[in-house]
Image 1 (cartoon, helix red, strand yellow):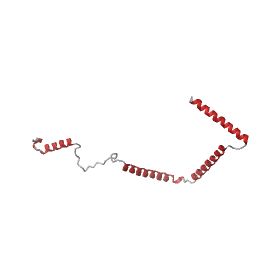
Image 2 (image 1 turned 60 degrees about the vertical axis):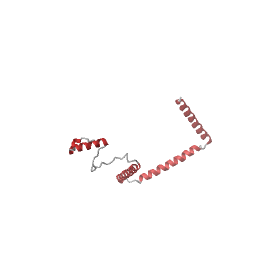
Image 3 (image 1 turned 30 degrees about the horizontal axis):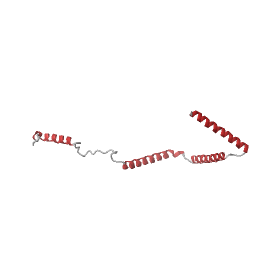
Image 4 (image 1 turned 90 degrees about the horizontal axis):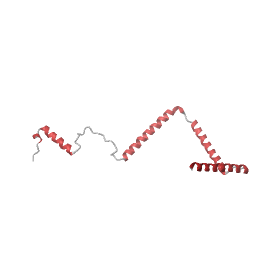
Length: 132
């Protein structure tokens, strides 16, 4: 069904194109769409000439310096963007630095009690007997 619709639309458009062209030849003047297309072609041609002129002004001797400047600017801007993004985000997402000078404590109260019990055993405090 879709193929039939595409075929019908294209057939109608082609017949309309031939009808417009025959009308144009019969009248001896251009239709407004063709004038519009000619103006667009003129703009495209002028743009191509400007690009060609600018391209001819480029010196390729220093192209390595230009690329290194672009890479450095991209790197600096990405670092600045990352710093701004990290600053706006929660510190939950950032990795904490480990302070080696800080003594390691037990992660839970149970392990803290076990560590204290072992410490008392080493010191020889009554064999770790609990008095009531």
